[in-house]
Length: 267
Picture 1 (spheres, rainbow, N blue to C red):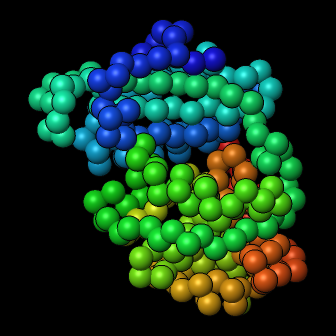
Picture 2 (tube, rainbow, N blue to C red; picture 1 turned 180 degrees about the horizontal axis):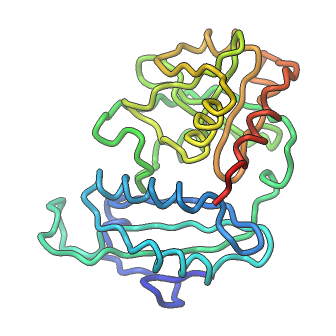
């Protein structure tokens, strides 16, 4: 089911700035029994991204009602897209605009229905650093599209991305975590990349569990030296990376611990 501005329609205007410029933000939520997981965290992040983009954020209760209306009765996915709305030609932000709110429900993809370890590859594409947009889940995701186009092997679920200086940033559709000497590491996202809700919840869970966390600028060799490497997002949860090209990791027990903690204190 698709709803646009509260109506059961599946189209937007050709003058919408989300279509023209990627001028907007989005969230992707997993739903269980018709209810969104981690709603509060998702809405807080949506509001923060809207503020950073100078967009009006929808009322929380009204948006949640939209999500509940479209959500699948079993397991599913709901995607929320907010654009700046319509404007005439040109980059200038209109003095007044009415945001477009699109809410789309779909089935949970097969790769999110199990907890199996995954295979990944390094992407050749390098992410551009832009601190003004760093961490925001904005609609302009062309870098991710081009990175995902680099492979078609169904055995490889994810590609890992570095920035233009060679530092590890994230996966194409996920955040990256690893454990070394009982500490949890994850790249800083102050230059580029998306700060996902699952990543935030994992870091919060690590604090509850007394696991030291380290964020910073890390090169690929530091990730390759890890005891266990994981990816996370709101659909997959925490998944162990079993193989990254020629590098193979045996289970070290961290994935199951962090994945269980990820789902604690669900809204």
